[in-house]
Length: 190
Ligand code: SF4
Image (cartoon, rainbow, N blue to C red):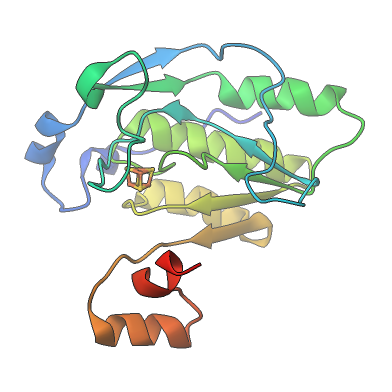
């Protein structure tokens, strides 16, 4: 397994302002709590799709989401990163006879927050999956750092990336509908 080191541009945030980093929650690297680390599919009736959490808590703190408040830590002042995810995943895939065709990486928190450690672990995880011929599904509202993009580009045949757009702008929502993106109104009527 390659040891991915992202570059210093990683200090930049989505707004391009390093001072924003001061407002970020602190990050704590913790070992994974146990095995197996591949969880059930987040999509019903998709047994060949698995999920894999990278963190507990999400940096983005979207107002409508509770993911930034990990249990046991009021206010979400820290993000817990499972920093040995790639190694644990590689070991688990070696043991499994029935490998999934795809893994949804970090379905409950953004895999590309403005935190170097998390983006590095996301890239290392993608590399492990790709080396086993498994697709990685990623969804992000974040700024994917250029050095992370280089890693993702190497495995583009194995990636499906979703970028959610939340808007009440009718024009943008209409454009989203053309692109087969659900508007908030359509999504809430499901
Ligand atoms: S990016 Fe996603 S997981 Fe993170 S706070 Fe926003 S909605 Fe929740």
